[in-house]
Length: 277
Ligand code: SF4
Ligand SMILES: [Zn+2]
Image (cartoon, rainbow, N blue to C red):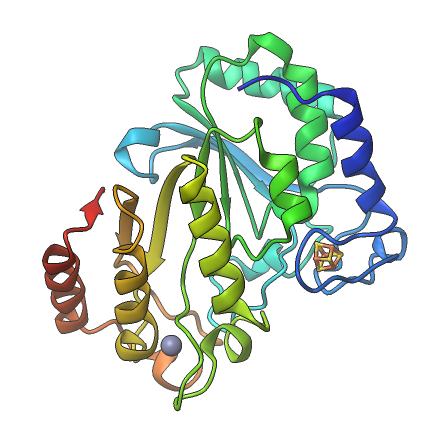
């Protein structure tokens, strides 16, 4: 993909003073860092590394972890920086571009922006991409919860090569609404399903991750897998390494049952999903 045009950069920068990048739709808040994500006008980098833990097609990725998140998942294992938007260091787009090119030379097969969530940082990411120009030869990956607005999606168009959504929660039902109550994202299911269906219809490369959570097979895993089966050829990565953080409560404090992993793999096979590892 190519570097973003100056007009796109300017349009993205406007969200630093009037932010509508995600459905929390905070408005004029970024200067005071008072949006739901509390990300201010500066982007803080919690860490960056050549990461061997991603899916095979991305390994090793140059992973850049940006602090702050639009979600507030009660079982987050990255709370250290996801809920502390000023954790880490700030660098200029040109400085980060130089590190990215260094990592590319070291063998990175992909450049992956991760969080927390990278969506509040789209203005910074676009500035970094502009600084990279034609020197970037590896695909740009955005790993996000994809709780996003059409405005945010428009900024990704032509910049993101591989869309890597974490589709964690299922639809609201008699059990409640996991996306809202556990993830802090009202309207999660309609936003996510509409967004992923639109990206799929546009022919974008989609690799969707689903984290299996203890006690959430019926409400989350099954409907998520059934939805993904409506998107032919989408690549699906089942994350089965759930480890409850100390602050997890209720069923989410338990280990993930091996039976749930087996059920998910069997359902994915029945549905004909294209699983990747
Ligand atoms: S990205 Fe942050 S500031 Fe912007 S609308 Fe979402 S929560 Fe609010
Ligand atoms: Zn659930």
